[in-house]
Image 1: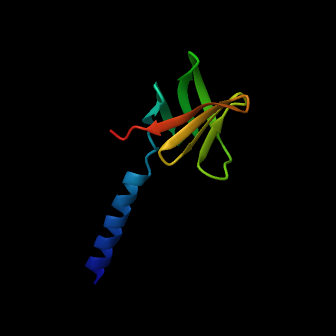
Image 2: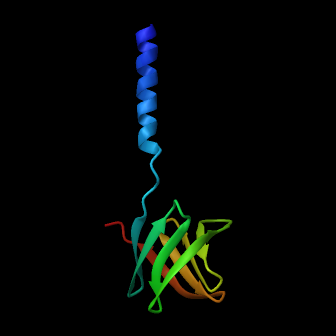
Image 3: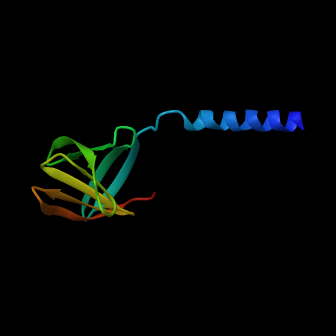
Length: 102
C-alpha cells in the first residue's frame, strides 16, 4: 500500500512540472476579407501583438462581456471563437476576420 501511495505521489508531482512552465506566445493567422492578419497571442503577458496600418501594435487584455478583447486606447482587437474584428477610435474598421485553422 505504501508503494502505491508513493508511486501515485511521484506521478502527480511529475505531471505538475509540465504545467509550471510559462506559457509561450502563439501565432494566429486570420483572413479578414482579402487582408491576411497575423496576431501573436501572449497569454502570460495578457497581450496581443499585430501590425496594422503599417504600425506594430501591442494591445493589452481588457475586460469583455463576451469573447476576448485587447486594446491600447486607440485600437481594439476583439475575438470570439474563430472570428475577430478590429476597431479604431470606437469605429469598426475590419469586421470579417476568420481564423485559419490550417
